[in-house]
Length: 123
Image 1 (cartoon, rainbow, N blue to C red):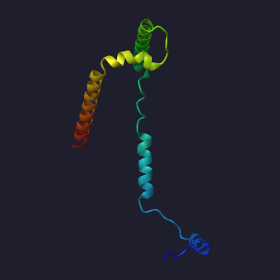
Image 2: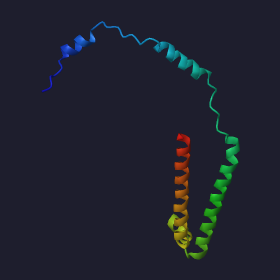
Image 3: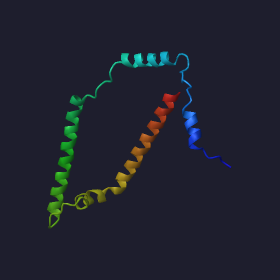
Image 4: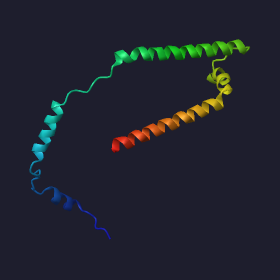
């Protein structure tokens, strides 16, 4: 059976005057680590100036594809609809199996490359 701790027991444990002293060499090792961190060069910033043109082209390409899909949907449908399913369903229904095969293949290639790189990094 467990013994309950009373408030008096806690007070007596906390009121002891025992001084806590770090082990020998602790302060020296901490200060050496602080000096190493202070001497380390700052991290390399991300090259946003080089990445922004590619991001802008990607956004423009996506906008172009969506506009073409909307125009194609408007030309074939008697009324205009803004739902994504009505815009994308003709595109996706044509090659759904083909897209699924390529997606699975891409995921498998990614998995194999990650596993191989992890094995090479640990070797």
